[in-house]
Amino acid sequence: MSDTVIDGVDYGPLACLLGAWKGDSGMDVAPEPGDTEDNPYYETITFEAAGDVTNAEEQILSVVRYHQEVRRKSNDKVFHDQVGYWLWDSVTGAIIQTLTIPRAVTLLAGGTATVTEDRTVFEVQARDGDPDWEIVQSPFMREKARTLEFRHQLTVKGDRMRYTETTVLDIYGDHHFDHTDQNTLQRQ
Ligand code: HEM
Image (cartoon, rainbow, N blue to C red; front, side):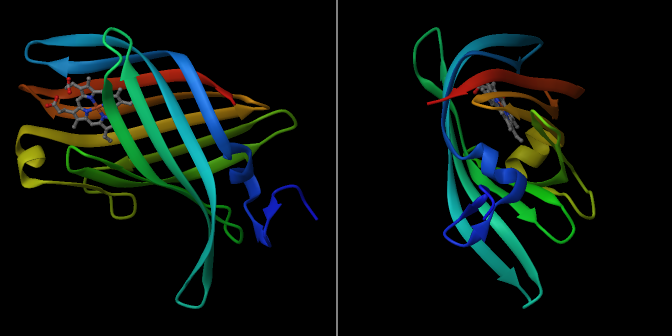
């Protein structure tokens, strides 16, 4: 049996995500009216094996559930909380990340996992209005702080994880604001 199989479910490339991770060198660049704010942060991300699902008696997706909790270094308060799933289709190789944040924004990002000898690189993206990988947001957010695009690259090498993500926003009159986040984490 492969070491990517847990309780009879093969998690394939997602298996390397499993566990609790901590990182304290995060940097967030976020919008504020007429300016940007740079927020150094630390965080915990937990990834759990959540079995598999069968869709239309045809498609089987392996499921990893995650929770990301991010705290500002300046005051130790949680300033970003995110939940979602990473999904893998063993037949097509497709990778999907679903995410929800409590600003009333949720999305479905699609992409790939590239597995080489020493690392796995996940790359997914979503775009407002994309027929496949869509962003859903409340009427308020659509009008005032619209998310146009989301791009995420996450690399796992042994017990080290690094990610960079770009969320393109239309906010405060800036029609293309790159809201970026990056961090390096260690598996606990
Ligand atoms: C580590 C990840 C992230 C951190 C630390 C973070 C942090 C922030 C911060 C500090 C702001 C400025 C407003 C405020 O002070 O609350 C902000 C705004 C925003 N973020 Fe994020 N964010 C992250 C990821 C995301 C993601 C993944 C999305 C959506 C896909 C997102 C969507 C937004 C939106 C729509 C706003 C504009 C709301 C506003 O400023 O009024 N963020 N974020």
